[in-house]
Image 1 (spheres, each protein chain N blue to C red):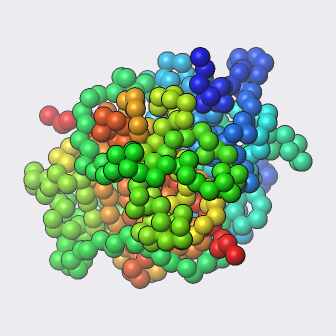
Image 2: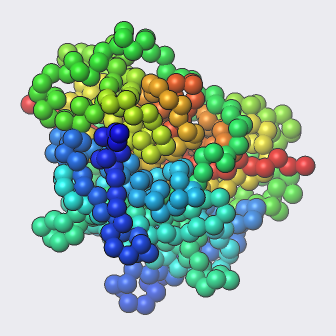
Image 3: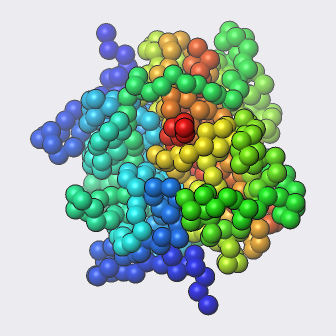
Length: 277
Length: 277
């Protein structure tokens, strides 16, 4: 059986192996607002890079600059290896689609890959795991109103259970703290891995919902660090912002696995949503 | 009068304007351990990008992947504009030097530039400014032992005043909290600006000093967000880490200006220093 996440992020070599070009199809199941979810696109780029570095299959750091909105349909990932040697390898990668102006770049990225199994076991994490009530005591994304589901078909990919204190925005009562935490797993039961974590860091609603700013927040830049292979089971995902200024905000994301380990961290710079209505 | 920071980060167009190549000289005043300080190199790349985008002169987000150690002497910055339009512009940039294998890439970077003067005035920062005793009640970097100054000539570029509680490592008593905060200004009085902030985020000693791990921590990746133009005067710089694991750690940096504004944030992924002795 192929899980839908793997089918949707599949890439195939486009012609001669050596030229570093991969073909993909952006699935419309990941549409959100006016584009395709940035985390899904990052995981798709991440898959092309994993194909490029079979002996260094894990993303350690990935930085993506979002240049234009992607649309469902054919796309190309062009990989350019910048250095490979020792325990890590670095490449640039661009996601491109045919557009009105010819081939247009949707995302420009840089990434360093390695082998998470070959890292040491020394763990000294002082960050604290988010505290969430059990999943069944949280608010499921399946309770989202139909208008949200219509706007964000990607909600159908996930089973998310929000902290009850972090969903006041859904009923017009945002907390104002700038924090959203939730349990997370893929709806079809596919277990998390280093590639899927690249999607998970951009899967929750924008943290600005919790500041009372509804509307989607376009990402300018997102950098993710994958720090360990996640254990199977529910993930805990926490988004927070501490500096909304000048029409932009940073969104920090932490992903914790079922073994209580901080497996991924990300930060993105996004545009503040324009007030609605 | 030309301040030394401006002289050291100067770039000149290398040949035909349109080809996006800039020549530079890496000054040996920025040597630290076995290489040239990564923040200085980031500011130098940032200067080439400012030349590329005269109407969008300010770095909003810059991500740098450090591929090999730079050495003092000639270098080239190759800029490739990936998108320019609307209020922001994005380019890739590489810092290269002649090496044993021909031209070698030291740093591969992506950056989005804009005009910080054209952003809105809306500021809702919940992050808290670091609390530091007055500069004269802090520990100046000029008190560093000669062996440190010999290892890190770049210390001569700065006037840094460390929080007295954050320099226990200098006398063999690190706090173990993973935090270092200091007042910061350039030694010759040059005031901070958006470009110099790219250097400031990587100027302090590695935060691992405060965990009792002496030795330099090679950066794999660093992303900086410049969020506002800094006011003149002392900056406050705070480094912290919360997740040291698998031989790597993240180092978060905040830079606050004399007006109490959070003007830059950065995060880097670095290799844990090897134990000394």
